[in-house]
Image 1 (tube, rainbow, N blue to C red):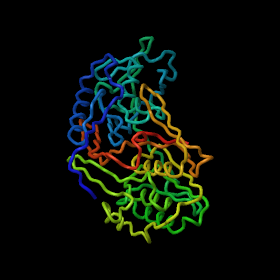
Image 2: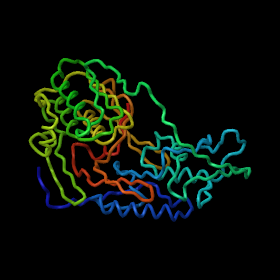
Image 3: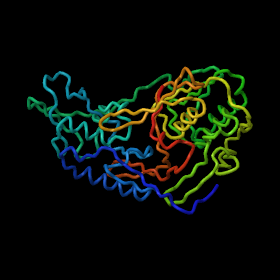
Length: 381
């Protein structure tokens, strides 16, 4: 591991939509946002040049401004229709504001740190909001009728089969998450099976559906098992933390460098020592929970086995989202589903403002094997 003396000459450019265009003065909301900025300036190690309110492109930044357990039972849709009412919603009446329905939708969408192309905004609109100016008390319709917003606690459905895991053939490898401290047993079992049996299978399936991430160590070991020798795209990691300390290490040689003890803790039967590359077909099953280290696994597999990458963008609610696909038929890799993404930040610290939970990342990768243009990119089949 190397310690670099100089801070990087880099700042984070934030260019997400602002609340300024809504023609409403949100004192309470702006006060909360200003506190969030103070926390980010204190704990996130790279300066952010704000042209917006909060840094949505930091993947480990979360702004939980609602209680997900309570929801409005009135049946509405994004067009403002209410079941059994002939008139549409004109205004939302909150604790302190009267907000046009379309503007309320815009406001909520600008506070959500997820992909709006793949999101049901009604979920967030209908939750119990902790921000006074946005907490819905009633709806005023175009015919001047007022409908009260009734909240109900969501009942958790009991899934009798929730603990019954699906049985897969032996060439399927299931990684529930990559956090060694919580999931060592599963990680060790699947890594041992992969390392010992790689060449027995002409096709290998990886299941990381609902794997939200964790440690990168298992991800690097999986790739070393599949690629054999270190490939050109495999670079060192350079990371900066909240104390402005910069560290560099060869993440493809973890057992001898930065994470010696973590690799030992896995207690693998053997470490991958292949000299050749896996020559079969890889099937990767993903979903929108795949941020953090599970996203790195997807990206690494695409770099090594995916062939030509098609990069493109989508626009939703005035935000631009990056996507990437591969040719599933021509490459040695086939994707099933759509991933979440990451921006190379991590290790969030939790803060609370009047019941609102804020998660602020405290570290950032300055360099890694991931190309800069692929951070914040969603991979899809």
